[in-house]
Image (cartoon, rainbow, N blue to C red; front, side, top):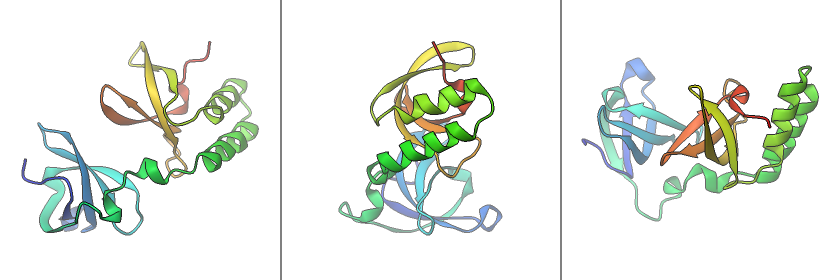
Length: 153
């Protein structure tokens, strides 16, 4: 691994030339990192090949090291999910949004992933990613899941 947790890195110009703080190493081969964008404070997975250079390191007590789940407003997520439920014309999608609205971080939810039924730990609702409704943790990694992956019983 070329970079470590708490390193401040800049992506190459081809990938926007943005500054990120590395939060965790998500994959070793090929090297990937979960990092927080310093301007918009959203987290992204960036590959090592996207990084142009390391420009510094932040301290252990830095505000950048806090996981974005720590900043997640549970009530805002529930309100957003309820609002989305009432906007849906499809009854199945409405039920899925209402199921998300009833969850708290740490609760488990059943989803269909690659044809298999699995249980994931719910982390938060995605406000800014229309393709992915929520973030869940499965097999030690954090993943974005689409709304239609939720298994309704």
